[in-house]
Image (cartoon, rainbow, N blue to C red):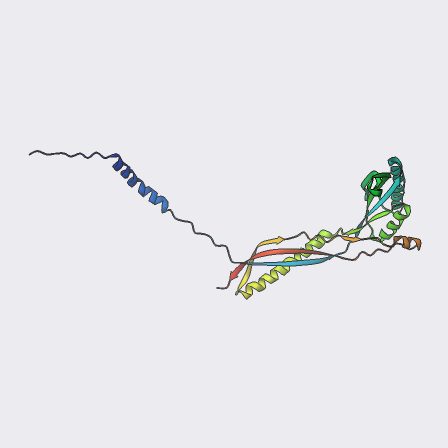
Length: 252
């Protein structure tokens, strides 16, 4: 009896198919890897509120300027220096210490006119400004009169501020957060649950009050009548706004 042995040699195509079959289980394992479940954020209550506090200014800032004109720049500067020195001396005589008087600007330049559209140099202008930090607001009127009497011919107005600003601002912040929490508690109860821990509390502004500027008027009349220039300070309002996010605890 004769036996015939048949040997099958794989072609390139068959070899490629075999390789694919071998890879399929590996690919299947990779695709079947467990997917991590997405964590849902807790239900939240979001509220905003505004807090306000009253600020009583206890300091002031006044800008005094001396402006002089002369045929030459040196003459204008010399006249200006003489008058500004007299202004500073008058302020010092009223009790203002040197550390609270600061030169804020100095300028010397041509004084020009344009008759019939043509440039004409008529002289020079010298301007010197000083800023005075007033520690006692009761002195504001007296300081204005003293400076004007010594030669100041321009006042930039008054600006008030308080050394207690930070404490007042924090009081306004506390009020705003208290209001925001109270609103959040009402909303949570109305929704059938309760209020949980805070997630975020953000202040939307710094609470800086609007600058209080007061223009000086009728100063010449007050001085001629030998009456001190009247100045009224008043109050400032510090306002802040907060936004809060809280956890909503469901009763179910």
